[in-house]
Amino acid sequence: LGALRAVRAAARLPPAVAMSPPAPPAYRNLLAGRFGLVIELRKTWVMVSRHLLHWPWRTAGGVIGLALSVAVLVGSLWSVGGVDYMIDYTFNRTERQDATINFLGTRPASAAQAVERLPGVLAAEPFRALGVEIGSGHVTRRIAIIGRPAAASLTRLLDTNLTRVDIPESGLLLTRSLADILRVGPGDIVNIRPLEGTRQSRPVHVSALVEGYLGLGAYMELGALQDLVAEGDQISGVNVSVDTLMQDALFARLKQTPSLGQISMQTVALQQFRATMAQNLYVMIGVLVSLAGIIAFGVVYNFSRISLSEQGREMASLRVLGFTRAEVSTLLLAEIAVLTLLAQPLGWALGFLVAFGMVEGFSSEIFTMPFVIGPEVFAYSSLVVMTAALVSGLIVRRRIDRLDMIAVLKTRE
Figure (cartoon, rainbow, N blue to C red):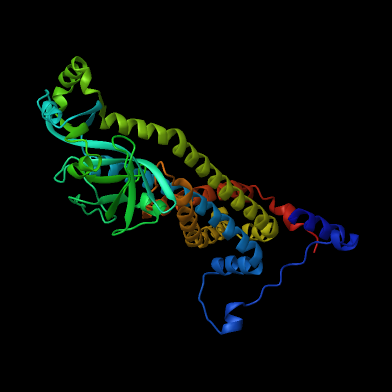
């Protein structure tokens, strides 16, 4: 539409007007004339400000274009901090065990003592994973309730403020994502129907909510969960702390005892999680960073070329009067600097809104992305856009070095 409008305006020009040199722009005192403000500026900045204010819509378009580049970066780079926080929360703060041994079926609680006697095991804490159908009203979900000892230290539950939440002797702890789906909170009642054992539905009250970013989680005290299905003292596996120097001996012993099931190492799980993120999230971020750089480069390049075409004669005149190339180039680069600086706060604000909206897009019942955005996200976004703008400006600046001063000064008056 913009190109068609320009072509239409050019086609309507009479031949005599089209062949005559363009009239110089009529500048006016915008601030000082209207509001009586007296601002002492260097002549360079007076020329820059007059040119920018003389074309307000073009200036606003350049600022908005650069701001959108910053917003694209902020709206994508925040996810790196969210993933790092999710990894730290899950693997360093809550699931702090070195490995998890899952039994083939349920075993008596004495199996935890047998695991503790294995070579290299420093500490062992049993758990029970019970598949249930949990519901409130017409909303139901099939999940696994994890039963843990009340005094468990290898695995912990934390709230939003990273404060430890102790497992009560009765009642249920829900992650916030599951509580939002069921539309329940502390003190509400949910119905739990075990998918094994008696399969009788029972009401259980919600004691508290905890944070959890991987899946939909529900937790109970180990004894209370065992009583829920009336199965006796049964466990599903053991979380263990392992001496790294004795890992090979532990693996060899587990191979000789197939009834103990399989062992899952936290380090392996973390590596697999990072690999999954690298294949999906980081590739997307790379594409968006490239896109933002291209947008910033294109906006600045087009703005600079138009500005140079309008001020080419004036710049050539300054060169004839003795101004150096650097001094003349300052006029163009200063305009780019003003546009880029004005675009930063607007881009940060737009990027924050984009990032906040993308949290819902990333989150699902499989995992919830925490909204963590630090100052380094804004700094890196601005750095990328400023670099692209600088490169684009320097490319256009080379045209100033090649100005044919004599040819420009021969322009008909």
